[in-house]
Length: 581
Image 1 (cartoon, rainbow, N blue to C red):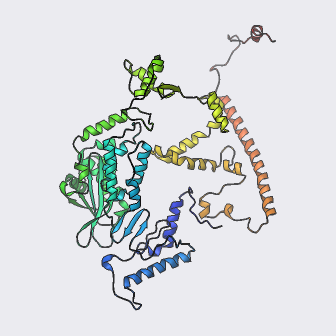
Image 2: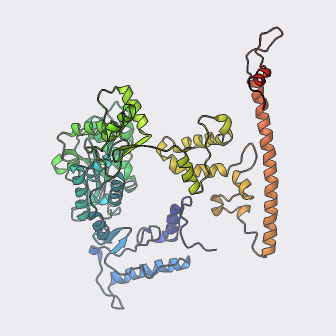
Image 3: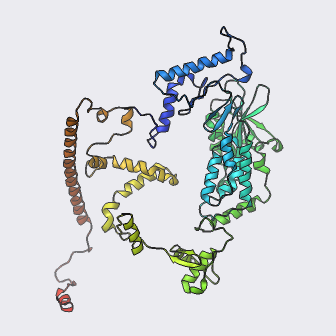
């Protein structure tokens, strides 16, 4: 069998594909090509290095050298039996489109077609549209100076608990990003062999960090290799200025460390006190000492530049600085407001119609709250909290209150019956009724906590792997894997694809259909025996647990002795009160 496509969803499939391409073309990397998955761009010579002399065939030397390089790569791909698409391939062209970027002798820039599609987007009406727009822009963020600063108002709309409200500030941020995409600077590849230093220019404002990694060419003209930006969290905005500047330098070097390790690094910033701190490690703050130790690993040269000369990140530290604290406080106050209604046409200033003359009491208070999302007059804080909790059970539409259906209502049951969904309800916190189902959940939960390692928001991405690991791990009670009991054979692990085991050997090669069917019948017969064995082991384990429970748990702390008063149930009273028909 030959797999001609990348298995989507397989563990580390993208990384394996990239590793395989680097292994195939390792003798040409990075002088001739740097493959990215199935895209193999082949470089020609630089413009200033073109050799215009003619060879014996009358072809210019730099062209014939490029043709030979292309022939070497094509020959190598043929040796490993890789198939190329002639329709998608381009040879001997001045520029080429690679992964959404146009690359030529000057550098790379965003694809004009994609930029034009982003520029046609209108104002967003929901958080979903904001995420869609930012997702389109963030793909080209390395070509957008001051990206974090320009996009900060839009990212503020996505904060948890904040009600969606589109304003002039968000419109201007969206237009600024569009203009930056339509006229981006050309980003060139850094030269690590010329001996000229890689220059990292960093500046930090009260809201964001901005940096650019560049280099001077042979004529001394500075060019940009990549841009970077990051919005500061609330705790980081409270840092003192020098500590915030040091955090910005540490973040820039850590984020783009793959472009700086082993190179001559020159650090430029307009914060003069940083140089003494980095050179002498003169700070009593342990956290800042760790940052300084990381920065000194790159052995950077230090250069001070005036704030007005720091044109790359000057806007981050000075533009719109007036009223900065008031803006931050207003955003934090807005985030504290609890708003859960994010309908498509609802904004902060809009009031939904509500016919309050038809309602009274608590229903009237709930309707007024859903109409304005504000605290009703004459309502205490404790009562307002109860109203907000009760409001989750209602919705307001065309002036009327509607009660949300419960899962056990007749309307909900009819809905589930219509789509063939089997609904089983149980009472909450009922370990006696759902103990068998819930008993296997705690190990999965604890495994997710350890796997997240403090990054608790990532547990949904790790849940499929946790379930897979649980189903392919032997149970100490039954002695079998759950997947083995379900399928009748042991599953094949991803590692066995690279390191073959007995389970991956193609034993069925050379067998006819009758022999294969007979072999499968024996496997299914063995599955029934495994199920019976697992059932007996599980039953024995439950009996053992019951015996241990009976020994350690008693209904009364002291035993009953002769002469003690006890309550006796008299069944005759029940028969007298409810005689049989």
